[in-house]
Image 1 (cartoon, rainbow, N blue to C red):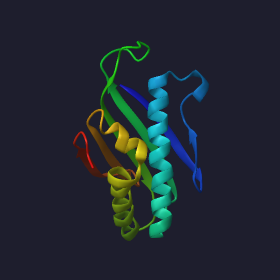
Image 2: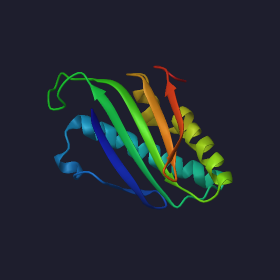
Image 3: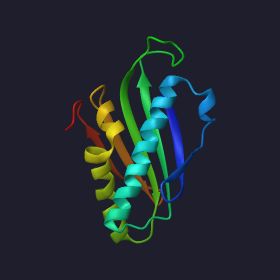
Image 4: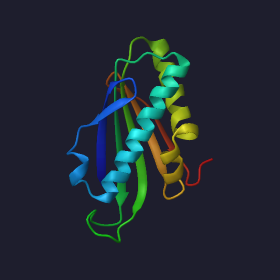
Length: 140
């Protein structure tokens, strides 16, 4: 399993919580692209829906057929985990809907990778798991 985690800084800016990009192998860079695309897209959807959050981390992970440094290994599944801090229950419902739209409709990297392998996501709000969704290969 390979994974990369990013944390929201402000507006549409994120920082990587793992080692810098320079030392990342290509498969981890793919996961970083997925996490950043999902994070930036989610922030845009939050903004459009007038959803206020206090913090967000996005973890992108993937199962591999072998060691990540081996050129022939491929991903067999992908998963995103959104960790959101937000005020009030009303905001939580909006957050869940916005992340559903992000995952199913607007994140281009996620839509592309869903053509390669099964892709799921889960949502943790204020430290509690509140949603988990598996999407079939080739989701539309």
